[in-house]
Length: 452
Image (cartoon, rainbow, N blue to C red):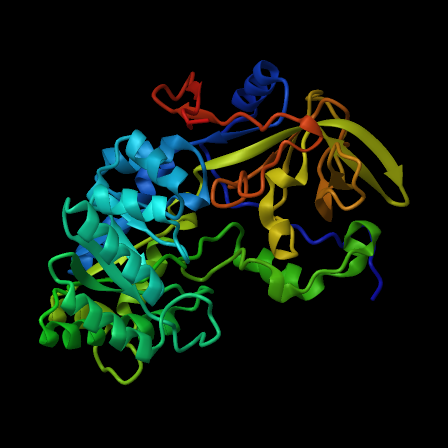
């Protein structure tokens, strides 16, 4: 396959009118280093859109924001103000949520093999605990009996049939044992229903497993247990780019498009375009008929009198932030350049999945009179590691990148900007900037109030 300088496949980010080079340039000057900025109004809008879908489908639902998607406090604050819950998986996350105004009964505690401190706090504050194993259930019962504060609220996590080798959830025999233990300890346990953890973004397996959980609830009620809620986790995709750009990239990508002829497997890439995304994906899920049913999932849930629990992270953070770096080095190579920025790839976390963050970064030149054309470049980090690349892909920039120019990586709030952050080389962690768009002409900004 012949690759020419005119064949660089572009992956332009979907437009977001919330940010302007003027705002970003001013922040870069003030902070003098890499930084992500956060747009909490987008979070609030995404939350409202999902609630509208639930209401339109006639489904009693409750949304928990999956805090692991971003460490910033502002999104927890917006969830608390909006009456949403928080999905936490560590003691620190639970304390952070409480400290920023989330009520204990609006916490969902997930994760495998939770430690005793986390379970003790969850029981004390009335959080819902997604119990992942029999020994964990025994510890919850023991804590509830010892503390005698209130019955512990639990969901029993089910091993997904679509992913039988998952490390999350209990088998059929383990579930049967768990239900008996819940019956025996009814003074200490409120068994409120079932949950699952399902990887991937396909709607049909999620609808099938949700319907299975509804059946589990009906059977548990016959036994005398409460069982009125199911949690289907997150797994709602978002779109970063348009369909044509995404499919063209997948069809035409070639090692010559990447620095050092790096190769990636397409199956490892996040689906950067989805035919239905965010709230539309939720609507499509609720309209999906589970296997063996002629009724849509929404009807199955309504008819059983079940409350649907959701734990989205990325879908609530769509267009809720971006990450900015400054170019501090430009090096010529054969037909392209290598840029070095003032941060590390640890602030773009897709490498965690043997991939990279693919949407095109936006070049914000210091010299507004810079030449125009096609200027391919890859982006490396300011560390002593050969593999510390923010972008192996050669981006066809419209201006020649120069020292002092800014690179804005769009739509990074969901899992990208801080999942893998580390003070490598003793570099400080980039400060998070909250832009409160109270005044569209002169947006106000502040530093995030994440506890340290």
